[in-house]
Image (cartoon, rainbow over all chains, first blue to last red; front, side, top):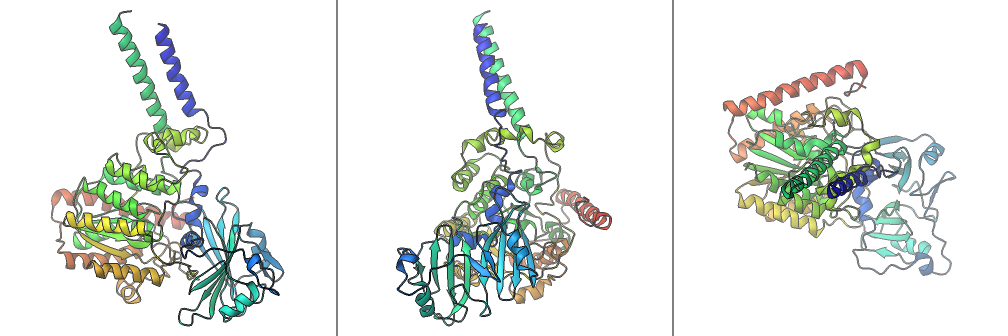
Length: 211
Length: 354
């Protein structure tokens, strides 16, 4: 009889152990979709995944260390009309502060509720994505300088050259024939060069490094 | 108590505990009925007929852009979609393997967007692509290939380990659909009858590296080999979704691969193909260009059905009574769902009727 009781007690303990230890670990594939779908909800998630790729094999050097004499300190937070756009941080406040946008695009994630938003202000594009832990919170994912009407805080704009970049920022942390990048913890400034004229900048991107 | 009785009592106790655990596990697993319905897509395949000429595999760009009903009605082509949200290429491969356990289609259509993901991405999407699969070697390998660092194989074997904390979140759906989900797809197609024009679609931000990963190429190779071994024609497509952005550099890599291995590749974003399909992004998408609505999906399927029928000698099977009866049921549900969504749109302004 004792064995029977022990057996039943063990079964009950196993059951309780598996079902009643919820606590605040409420994450399920369905209900915590926000958390787990954020990568997909992130605007063009592929760029996020690809961003940190050190596939070139270049040895990164700290940009501040590498900066030549007389160059400016790199700012990884873009300032537009007095509003600081810090990638990876809360976005709704800065979007409101930026005022009326020229156009906007909503990109909902598949299956889940997260939405990435693209706001365009002239030559500036600001991209947000939902926070992985709180879908109601939008984070700043990317700030794109699309044309020569806008410039980085250091004065570099579309149409400038590789030499212009190096003169202001120093040696890039990572570069190939098509881009030059300066990184700090969790974020980067990327300069992309024109496909047909690879010395000239075609787009500048302040972005989160997600991986 | 005799020895036999003690053994019997012990076995009965253990069996009861296992049954109880299984029952609780079933209760706690997400039902994917009122919300995130896409979670039921993979499992829904097993409840349908297994006599398909064409199999679509891939992500949402498959299950939201192609209407198998239209291909049946127009050409008598029996097709199904084994699609799931953010289905990664290795998941597509193992789903293909899994499907071949049940049937052998003439044509397999693979949407190439997932080539951009070289590594496991998200547990939530993994669960929706994998948990609905029946157990097989393919499922085991799919889990192993898909798991993120935070996941464990055991939690796929015993989902209660993953979902135990849902006990405090149970809803009426968990009881209502305890014994199974209601069919809400149409041979793997997710139907939407509303419309939201595609406007201000952003172009892709430049990437520092456009190369697809070795992992993805390996699985595409495996997919091609598996099709060849089974005498199945593999057709590569890029569905006409405007977002996420499909880069020219990606397209060139797929084009080169298709040419190398003599595979057909159709990029439905190509303006000349768009002109032929007649997709109107002002009316034929329900979410601003990410996915087509039913009217766009029907246009696309009409064009693609003709393409497949002509090139791969797919005969009109509408005269086969058993198959036709299965499709009659699907078509009836399909028409009813369109009517339901249109009614909701009129009454509530949205297809869900909320």
